[in-house]
Image (cartoon, rainbow, N blue to C red; front, top):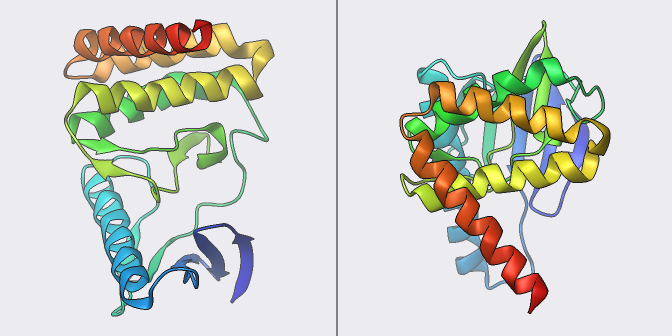
Length: 197
């Protein structure tokens, strides 16, 4: 088993064709509180993946959650991220996948090109560690807002065309595109007002 990523919340290990995601202990927290948070977050992430996968959304296959609910075993999709191998041709599909997740009430919470894997000419969404379930248009719009800003910051040269492709894909597959896009505009206006204040 090989450590492939060490983050603030989790360590990621690769074991042949599988990925093991271990939510690490926080020693600055009281043990009982830390255990409860780790268990609940791991279980929620597993359930998000499970619902997405069962509805044929491009995510890693969740294989099982450990008995102590601190580890998720899932399929390995490779390490070719959209962030490091950026191409606009995948962005419409990202919009489609995001819309389908939102239709199911799945909010990713960290929708960036670093959390997207290119595999076999297709695109997959990974790392639902900050995700949650919600049907609120505010939460869906915030997901899009985060992705828009990630595009702008990391892929400036392609930002306008990429975002246009994303929105086209989202509108095509979303159950409530007008409501979500309207809320997105409200979020952007609020942010502009805060910056100007």
